[in-house]
Each structure stands twice: as C-alpha cells, then as structure tokens.
Amino acid sequence: MPDLVLGVSGSVACYRAADLARELMREGFSVRVCLTDSAARFVSPALFEALTGQPCLSDVFEEPERGRMAHIDWARSAAALVVAPATANTLSRLAHGLGDDMLTTIALAFEGPLVLAPAMNPAMYDHETTREALDRLTERGAWVVEPAEGEVACGEQGQGKLASIPEIVAAVLEATAHGSSLAGRHVLLTSGPTQEPIDDVRFLSNRSSGKMGAALARAALQMGARVTVVSGPVALGYPPQAEVVRVRTALEMLEAALSHVAQADLIVGVAAVADYRPAQRAPGKLRRQADTMALDLVANPDVIATLAGRAKPGALCVAFAAEPGEGLGPAYAKLKAKGVRAVAVNDVSQPGLGMEADENALTLVTESGEVASGRMSKSRLARWLLERLAGELG
Image 1: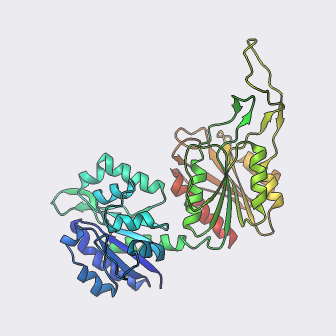
Image 2 (image 1 turned 45 degrees about the horizontal axis):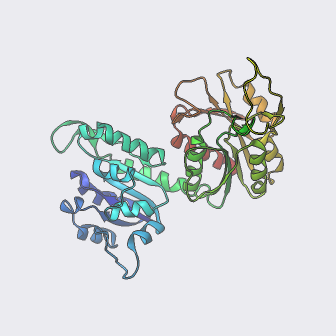
Image 3 (image 1 turned 90 degrees about the vertical axis):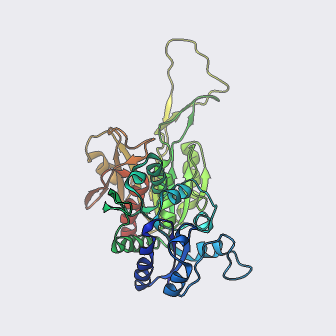
C-alpha cells in the first residue's frame, strides 16, 4: 500500500479534506495528514488520526517516532504529496521554497509528484502573485487541479471553490501512475546549445536555453528514471537528482554522451548542436582588419545519429528538430537519415514558442504517423512526450 502525504491548509474548504482522505484510502493509499496552523483552527488532528489510523502532524518539531525527523521520513516514503485545499499563502510559500512549518518543510524534502488543489476567494485566485506562484510550481512539474466556478464561502461568485473530490483523486492517480512508468530505466538527454570557438573570445552558437532539456530531466525523474544530462552552456540549473555532465562543443558533447549511451534505455537529443565549427581556432583575439571576413567551417558530427548507431538493442532514440514552419517533410527525412525511432518537431516560426520561451508545441513523428501536443508549458510538454515514449518502451 503506497504512502501518501495529504497537506491541508487553512481554507474554509479544509473540512472536505476528510472526505478526500477517505477516498484516497479507498483507492489503496495509506494516507498521512499534515495540517498547517490555520487549518488546525478549522479541523483537528484527532479527526484525521481517527479516519486514517495514522499520526497527523502540524508542528515542525513533532516526531511520532522519537529520534527520527518526521519531515524527512514522510517525504522519503510518500508516493505523492497532495495539498488540498491549497491557499494563496501556502502556494506562495511552496513556490518560493520557504520551510517555516511542517508542511512546507516536508515539501522541500519531497522529490516526487506534487498535486495542488487551490481553494480561495476568486479575487485572491486571480491575483498576480497567486498566478505567478502557480506558474512557478507548474514549471517545476506540479499537477494543479483547477478550482471550480461557483459561490465561495464569503458569498462571492467566481473561480475559487475546491475542485470535486473525484477530480482530485483522479489527479493523484495520474500523478502516481506517472511516477512509475519509467522506473528502472536510464534516460540519457543532450540539452542546451553548443559553442564552437572562433578565437579565445568569440564562438558560434544558437538561442537554445536548455529549458526543454531541464523540463524533460525533471519529468523523467518524477517518472522513476535514472537521468543523465549532457549539457552545453546554459544559465539554468538541472534537477539535483540528475547526473549532469557539462560540455561546451559538439565534439565534447558527443564524447560525453557516448560514455553513457550503452546503458541508456531512452536517448533524447534535445540539444541544439551546431552543424558546423570553425576549421581553425585562432589564438587570442581576431582583430578587425577589413569590412568583411570569411570563416572556413567544417561539419560537426551528427550527435544524435551517432548515439542511435551505438545504442543497445531495444533502446529508444529520439531526435528533436527545430523547423521554421515548412511542414513535416524534413522530419520524416530526418527519421530515416538519423536512424532514430521518432522525431519531436517544434515550429520555431511561432511567436512565444521554442527556443528561450517557457512554452512549446511538439509534433511527434514516427514511421506510423504523427501526433501533435498543442501549445503548453515545457513542463507539461515534457510529461506529454515522455508518457508517449514510455509507452513505446513498454
């Protein structure tokens, strides 16, 4: 029976968390409840202890087992952390990484799927800071069960009512199923741009930010995989649970990825690898001498095609392709030329999508056809893509 932590924060809707705990138990979860101080003024720990047969925590210094840190034990054993209802205050604290009570401390130590069910006044839900907190949490991979429209406790109308118990339970089931679909698999990602030196100061590169690669790394970890990321120079951070190898050039990326490819079950070439590099790297700094300058370029190796050729039998190799809205013909050509099983195409001609953006839209092309994701955040898109690739792996 998998453990689950149910965090309850101080919305009037917190009385409904008792029904949620019962329904989650009917689905086979062992539920342990953590109340914020505000929630404990609406409902008591005794209620949840009687319902679940488990201790209920609220104070950050509570230790049901003496000498053991409860926030670590609960975080490490839980299949999911569910916060329902989630108030505006709790969402902001979770988004900013505060650890000032038992619930937020558990959240900081927790590494699995996070399910959030907000409930609050509609104006609070629409407030810029609340939306920013939800956006930040969604970017980290949280499942958000949107509140319902209707009359809230204060008598106002709008979106703010806690979602129905079946909706929240369905999200928890999806999150926990998602959390095991790549269990025991090794995922190898290439991510970010490469930089090809012209001299000691300048280089050839592109606008890749590594955001899609980081989102895929987070999603793969949440799905139970062991993750290795070979990354070109990026400003963002990757999840600490992933093994990250930092490189700069296409040749370095290939060498690093080849050292891991034999163990990989899923190889995804997200990196925007430079097709060419300067034939010679000039020492020092090239000085301006004329109105024009010619650079001799030589082809870089095709990283994802080389990895596909070295992958172990049964491994699934996927290429990314940034295309300027020219249809899917080039993607089908790449499918054959690179020896991969799928090509994930994003149309970089669309404003606000693709490189450097927080959103993207993919068309996954295989020999049997294509399927489109629609526009979504890169975190949601990473889950969308990996769920389909996990199905291909079996």
